[in-house]
Length: 321
Ligand code: NDP
Image (tube, rainbow, N blue to C red; front, side, top):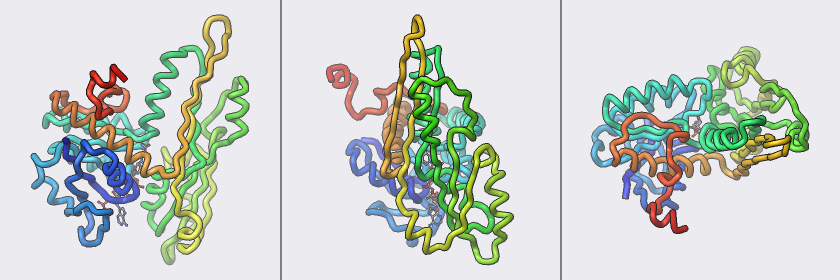
């Protein structure tokens, strides 16, 4: 039995709490939040102040980090990895190498293990892109997301000055997917594949024009897409935008021998993105605990982890099954 803690309790923190209820080999010690614990209402887990986390050293095998990628994880993952084994779902793709380097240094200096950027993209989609490209070296890989809520992008919107609340939908251009599946060869830019739609509630007296400009030019998040921004009321956001569905497709179209056509497709249809991402984090928390037991210190991504480490079954059982 490994003991785990949830660090940060937003959508993802709630998803991890639910996922842990389905994984009886992992025991939840508690939720650690930067907010006053009395104001954080969980589905049963005890809540502690984050600054008390270090007192629990020795009582926690893995910390599952559920902060936002925009500003929380770049600070929290390296800091917490100095004292604990950690798993995160850092999803700012362009900044993964620098995040990895910071966490790897903290892990190696302090003999801990960290698995960063788990989740589904990055995460399971990264893994499937690698499988598909290795198996079909001659071909093209395409990733399409949505239609769905991107928590990373919604989180980035909510941190803009003047924004009270917001949600962002990623919408794939379906006609493009169909043409690719039919065998058409296309040179696609980021802009050709998806567009982004933002629903934003402004704070009182906020400058809508400035907020819109900051959104559409935000590097790594919106600058390479056609982005629509709608300003709505808090009531409309609550009424029309509460569900958090997502999903997507990794498509590899390739050829073998004399132009024999091969298609690999990996598809996720998720009614709740945070509950699914939470489930992925929990499986990688199990792998993290096993790597720590084997003293394989340092940072890892999903590409480094053998599939059997994710399973609660032992090696002999997995071979038999
Ligand atoms: P949230 O904004 O809901 O939560 C982020 C943090 O904000 C929490 O850890 C919490 O920290 C704090 N917080 C939450 N609610 C409140 C509140 N009411 N008031 C003040 N602070 C609050 O983000 P999500 O949980 O939706 O997403 C977290 C990250 O997960 C995203 O940024 C994204 O990067 C990542 N993600 C990755 C995926 C992947 O496939 N790799 C897929 C989905 C998400 P605290 O408790 O300390 O205050």
